[in-house]
Amino acid sequence: MRPFAYTRVSDTGAALAAGRRGGRYIAGGTTLVDLMRETVEQPDELVDISSLELREVATTAGGALRIGALVTMAEAAAHLEVRTNFPVISQALELSASAQLRNMATIGGNIMQRTRCTYFRDVSAACNKRRPGTGCAALDGHNRSHAILGGSDSCVATHASDVAVAFAALEATVEVLGPDGQRSVPFAEFLLRPGDTPEREHALRPGELITAVEIPAHPRPLRSGYLKVRDRQSYEFALTSAAVALHVQGGVIRAAKVAAGGVGTVPWKLSAVEVRLVGQRPSESLWAEAAEAAADGARSLQHNGFKVDLLKRTVQRQLRIVGGNK
Ligand code: SF4
Image (cartoon, rainbow, N blue to C red; front, side, top):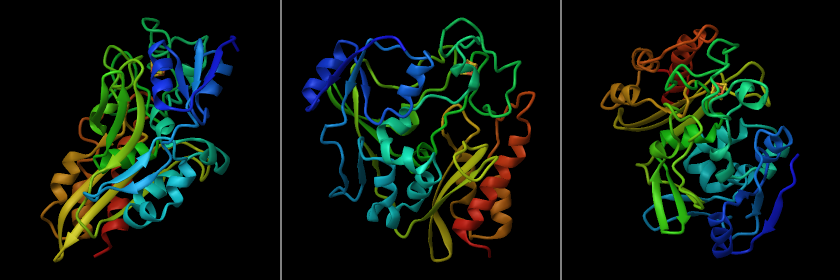
């Protein structure tokens, strides 16, 4: 590991000052320290923000749920308001990583985690994301876990976060503080598809700090849940996943929020599925018909063609779990 400076800050002003001079923010460190050990990341300065007052989970006056950036995955998953009103968030968190990691990793760090593409983590492999312009070893390599949606000729790596899929479905915003003040970034615009610049992964400007993720108020009751399909039942990343939230009133679906994970270069909002659900009565045939749209636009690689059908079946199954078997 290359030597680096370490700065511990206790207020956001000091954090932003350190961020302005190029320091890398670190809290739980569960991704960044691994990448530093593997020399994939070599920051000159780490800025430890774990003492900042960003640890609150609260409901705002308008009914939105605000989760501080430094709330750990375990704390968020166990929080009564999260479990009661947004089980899709709790379930996504509990199906992520190990208990030890969930006790360390934070919500802000979770959505900023970097891809699990093995070539990205192998510094001897060609990787446009790690070293722009060097190529993409995954395109002609072992690409079973890679993306079928949102990829480019430069990169086809999936985003690994589970809770980010729930945030995408629920149309969260990322609250950010920077040299120019506060701003809110819609989740759909926060994580970037690779295009020609896969090294650019998010919409943060230099020195900006995530302060919270806010989930807007949704009509009640809102039934929701998260389904994760993977090669083994624990401590494994998704092959496919589905976050589903439905508001059903008078026997009719009034609102539907659906997103998929494990298949896209970013958490993949399934707007075409949502459109097919709204205004309809829950039924087995509706789940099947809506899920057919889940893989619209999919482009598979040599080893991941199975994800197209698996994604549709994952979405159909989770619609049935959340919406009922009528
Ligand atoms: Fe790198 Fe992306 Fe290709 Fe993986 S898929 S090797 S992260 S460029």
